[in-house]
Length: 235
Image 1 (tube, rainbow, N blue to C red):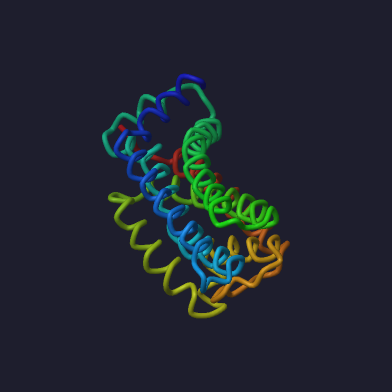
Image 2: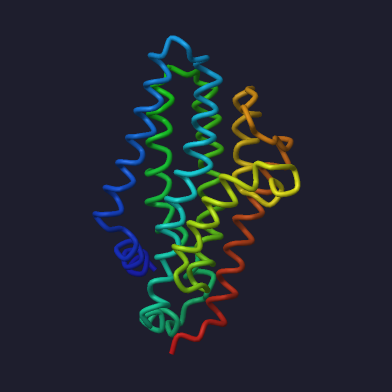
C-alpha cells in the first residue's frame, strides 16, 4: 500500500501545479496584509470575509479539485488503473490510499496560506482555530467528492471548475435552498460559529449540523468512490 501511495502522490503532484497554487496562496496572503494596513478596514470582519470568499469559496475547492480528479481519474483515463484494479487489495483500501495521498498535498497547500493570512492580517487566535477547522473539513469533503467525480467523469477538471465557479461561488449564495447543497455553505458556517463572527453575505447553518454534514459528505464521497472503483471497467 505504501508503494501505491507513492505512485498516486507522484501522479497528482507536478511542479507546475505546486507553483500555481503557491502563487495563488501568496495572492491571498498579500490581500490579507492589505487588510491589516488599510485605514478603512474593519480588520476582524474583513479577514473573515476574505477567508470566506477567497479561501473557502474558491482556493480550497480548486486545490482539492485539481489534485483529487487526477488521483484515480488519470489512471482511469489512460488505462493504467487496471494494474491497481487487478491487485488482490480491497477496493476501500485503494480509495483510502488515494484520499490520503491527495490530502497529503491538499491540506498543506490550503492550510499554509490561510494560516499566514491570519498572521499577516493580525487576526485573533480564535480566527486561527476557526479557519483551521473549516478549511480542514472543507478540504476533506471536496477531496472525497472530487475523487469520485474524477473517476467517473471525463474532463472532470473542466466540469469541476464550472461547478466551483458557478455553484459554490455564485448560485449557492442566493438562498437557503441552493446553500443547503453547497459544501462551502457548511464550511463558512463552521468558520462563523467557531470564530464567533458574522461573515458578511454568508447564509449560516447551525454549528453541529455543519460539522455533521461535512463529515457525512466526506464519508459518502469515499463510499461512492469505492463503489465506482469496484464497478469500473478498466480493461
